[in-house]
Image (tube, rainbow, N blue to C red; front, side, top):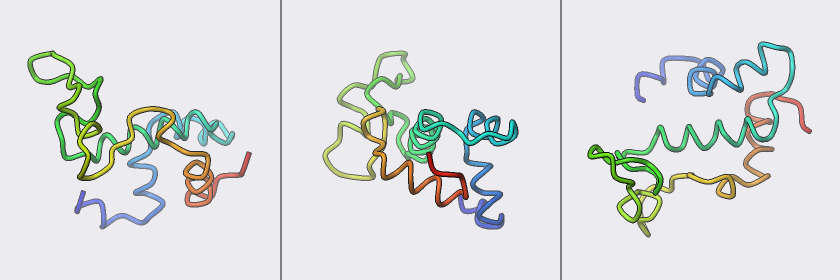
Length: 103
């Protein structure tokens, strides 16, 4: 992630942004709230330092992470795993941060 600092904020946003949001912008439309929510979820999980960010993630042996996930731990870096973890305020902030129109 440290190597990402060499890029401008706009380039970093597109490098970290899931393909659905990029496709929406490329198609000339603003991404939907669902696409932004998905982008925030994926980004949060990708930045997790854990091999088991979410309860539904799979361990190396193929078993679900469950209570061993970073999400289930009471302390440490928060990971967003479910739609309800991403608030409407977070979506609005994402739109502002990335210069996307409000819905």
